[in-house]
Length: 184
Image (cartoon, rainbow, N blue to C red; front, side, top):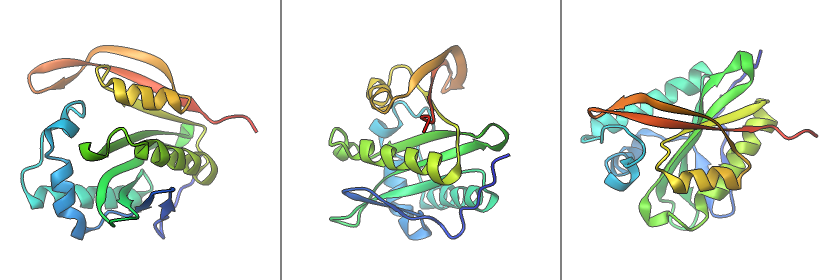
């Protein structure tokens, strides 16, 4: 079984970003991110309305780190030191050496290759540092930008679940993409 320890918290770096732990001082930016209609379009989650909700969200991320059940990084632009998104490996299935990747990014930074840099770094961390065998992504099938990003990084569609997710009065479909660790 996979043994993980995210303490001390591992900071990572890409060409343009620092990936670091999200802290309570980031709550205003988390609120902006998790209340943005464009960000939430395919996330299929209710928007945040208060700083308290953002602080609670950050606390839940901290709990997963302490429990070793997942890790999420704040995506910080090196140039401005602004938190522009969150990405991580969560829902670790330790007995199967598998985790789910998730990510969000403010719309002003879409289409600039930032999430591609971040995903490269997180995939590498998952395979080389955590020891994962596979990484999955659960995607709203209408989110073509996310699907293109995953396919660019070698993810392949493994499953398509019809109306398996209930949100906001609707049953939604889910597409599952997966990446298996390359053989050495």
